[in-house]
Image (cartoon, rainbow, N blue to C red; front, side, top):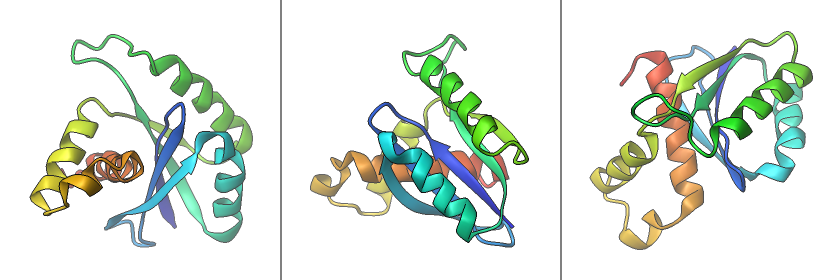
Length: 135
């Protein structure tokens, strides 16, 4: 069974998941947030997903960001859509910065690093890696 990670955003949502053995985190891409319910229900109908790791945004001091209330509301929706699937909140502080550094280290061209969809996907992968204890 897989673990699904979600980097929820107002416009776009990044997705990543593990292999069935839950060893490797791989980006799944992004989806327009308006279409996230359909995308997730499709994924759940096609794959066995054991749990969801949802990135939880906070500032360095632990205070809420502008996106925290949106994530809280989305967390409630996830529990309604998938009541039998645990949703784990994972601190996502600094993941965008780490994602950018990762893309630079991987040799991703500057033009491609401006792609917000790629950044969201890499951020979701990093959230999942943090949860797995890989980083």
